[in-house]
Length: 287
Image (tube, rainbow, N blue to C red):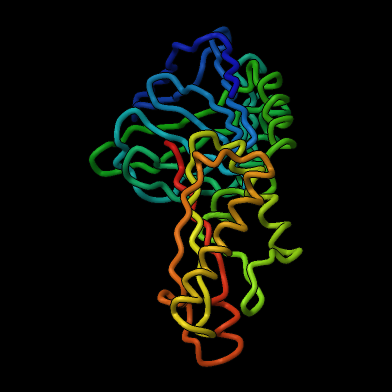
């Protein structure tokens, strides 16, 4: 994983009026900071907002782009915030573009943006604009609070972030963890679809260094208990051997087998039995 750092940030801009205070949290021009973390499993682009918190664009393998803004202190301003795109101060253009609204949550992650809004923020930053959130007032705190992302020194890290997105693995933890491959009756031969799935799993596991894979073999209730126990073992071993042949270390694989003692669904129909002839795959991530 690589981390690219750009100059540090350290300024908070305040505007004060006679009626109410206006706190505008924004990076100073000379000290704007964007950081990029890249890997084949996750890409992140982060921006420090002085005295307020940090904005984080991220996308995991197999997932969707999102944006969160985290605060240093818990924010007690639930409600609906308005989003604008404004010109940076040095532009001297007072116009602003309406971008929509977002729900404000209490706690240290008050702003959580879906993919469409996250992309809109990136588009505005690419155009040299400052996406800005205006928080709702409360009875306890009548300050007008706005939070902006600075476009200063954004383009270099953004280009690297886009390159990272292109290299993400297509399938991620949520698609692979808890998944299964299936077998024909009384067989431990891997089917073409199973091989394709295991290729994706091997690719993910090689990128997710430190993660452990548990392989669990199962059967339907066709045959004796002793026969099914041995068959479930051979199925688990077939999956393990294929993954090891594709470069995954055996030290990161745990094999277990249960015969017909743990059916996924009742063995009362052919369709049910087909779902029980399986090997399940569980990934333990190293955090």
